[in-house]
Length: 491
Image 1 (cartoon, rainbow, N blue to C red):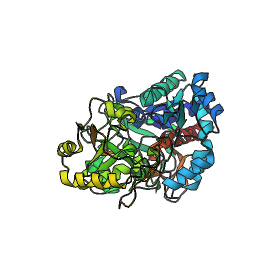
Image 2: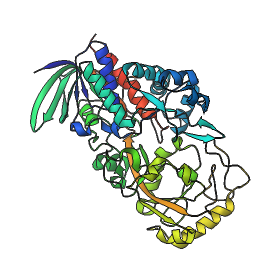
Image 3: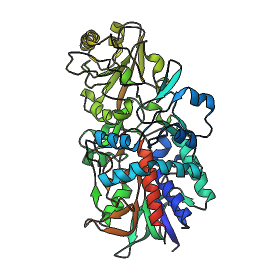
Image 4: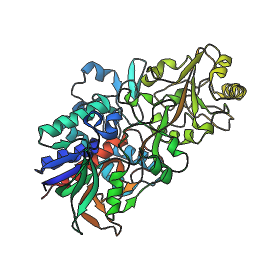
């Protein structure tokens, strides 16, 4: 039986960060990817690539994006996103449930981890267009989310793969880990299946970074609740929870929000799993500039409660709970020019009409009269005296409605009109394994470290509860992947 210093289960962003760090410490590293090479990278390949981290101003951005021109810098307000702001966002959106020690590790390590990734060869660029709008000749970034990886998720995974291979990391595709091997005390390797054959691979340490259980309808229904088998999966079809179950089978402690997940508004007719040809394009995240209605024709959520970064990951669940599990997003011509690029893809469930009455008849599954009554009430409630500004929470709100709109409220009265049908798209699950925040070592049911076993990425529980600040998934995987690789490497 071959013996490796470190075996890493998974080949997404968290797994690669573990691999890079373990190799940096001198370990021999084998990565096991259950997907074929064409679908490698787990959920990381499907992401748009936005990554949240603490920074103090333009000098931090310039250091991470050396290709930025002086002209770009001159017309851009990057602002700041301090550690204190990051902490505030994490505690606010998780309703103060995020594990304090894990959260502190995440926030305090975020900036240094970004620079470490840059030094490894990962490239970043500002998210113009999705995270900054041009007002009075200047771009202003908002919502604490400023940079993304070059080429989105696909570019990130390809860059990670190139860096890993050049450093001597071995990657085996079509190789599914099915069991953790132990000697009764420590983890000693992994049993795998490759093209129908079973073999055992020895290791001095194992890092589990195989994603959550979002691609398993059975586990979604068991832990998230009835109806969740109907959700579409935004990303990889291979994230079915095996990494979590393998660790549980040897006594690993579970932790976190097992009934919670990251779920968004996703094209109603999207396929069961993510499509790499479309990537993240099935998402529909410009709802703050319009309204959403359900099958009764009524609004059901405050579309302008906060920046999209802080609401999109919880609104998928709300859409799933609507009658017949769908909603329509409604926009008029005042805002269609600022809709995100995903609204312009070919594979989109969209209707248009010159009048609101004609639109009402085209909204499949919606009560037309209920919709028209809702539009009339909504338009009458909009405060038109406050200027509309998509770069800030502008306070342009409605008055007197049972479901308010707190910002960016515009009357829906200027045709032509556009509407997009959305369902629920699940990204990743929040429940998972319990780790030591200082080492990323998996803890057992007695809360003692399991020798030789580490974890990182989506399958670590305790970081996110109820909701999630946009872009925190990638930095979470990067921080704890790097930590796992550091401590998994033999000393």
